[in-house]
Length: 494
Image (cartoon, rainbow, N blue to C red; front, side, top):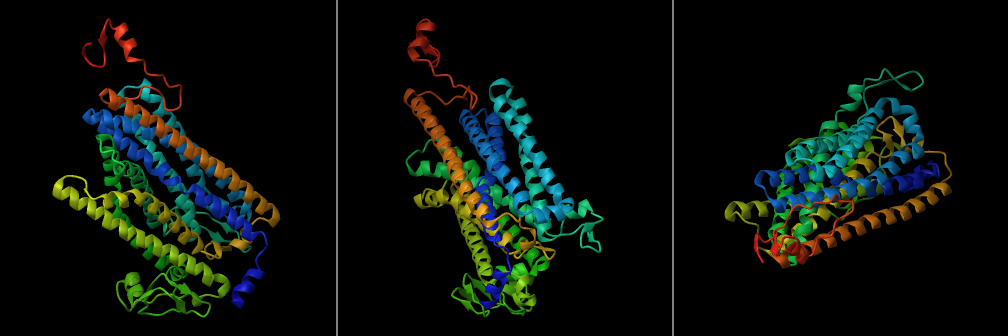
């Protein structure tokens, strides 16, 4: 406790509000990232099915998902721009010293962002004005642009975790920058693919969860069945893949960031035959309170044998490692992420068993209840993943080269607290508007679907742009009058 108090007394007063501001905006923005990265792919997958099978229901789903995708992108512009400004305003020490080394990642992300904006505009424009397959193929680069944006951000973050591609001169400044090495750091591959698959997994379960709720409320039509099945299948296939990628990423941390791994597993002293603790709390004297202890498992998971040596937190001075509170936070975040991932594997196996055995969805309401909350659970794992990545690196902003306290702005703490309050108010308004728009779109679509069901007509592709003026359907009597007593939707005489 005394060492922790000493560390806190040495930190500048503006460090805490700067951290809180960055944490809040990042935690808010990351809720939108799965839809920005993965929803274009899921939408195009449904669009392709619609064109290949001449499926009006699939086309209607793709059209509506594209509208949601555009709204999400607009909100993401706001939250992403705030993050970009904060990076320069709150952490000028890092960008001033290291920007020339790892800044290419942010440049790639910016180009991908603009390209994605153009492609989304073309996709929305093309629903009314392009031939069906031309429209589809023009949108194919859209998921690639989203992946390129993720590439840039993860390249920058992985460099902060395992910095390389430079040497330091006599004043400690980076020189002789090798851009290729700075982008493709030792942990980049594991972090990138773990992140990307997490985005697809989350988006798939979130979209499917919407239709699972409708299914539980008695909407058992083909629209809800197809809206559930396609994204859930994508997520179910990727769930075991993600579990293996997560294990690989954790092992990469074990080799490249041993102190972060010690925080993830709350290992106090370097040793072999290290036990695994599920949850639990690390105390200042190195003891662990609570949790479930599994003998030797941590060493086995790290190196496939009990004799594997695991580096402990006490290997480095207290000033160069996470505090006991930070280590406990990282440990809980990591365990929550692993626990939810394990439960999602069971859900995916349930789905696969039913499909292989009956070629049908599971009939249990409990399955759909679990599916309805799976997307929210995935969002929790995404938040936990970033907590593990960022808090586990403390006190370093550039691992083993620059501490967070050295990079923080010299702006007064009071001004930063005021800025945090303003940002919270703005974000509540922004996310409230996003939710209101989505709910309004859902209501409008439901009214349209109920009208079609009442008339017995099949769903048809919407003819209006998602955000342009929407034409009102003409009364049936007007159609009959103009057609000389024939209803064009019925194909026969009135």
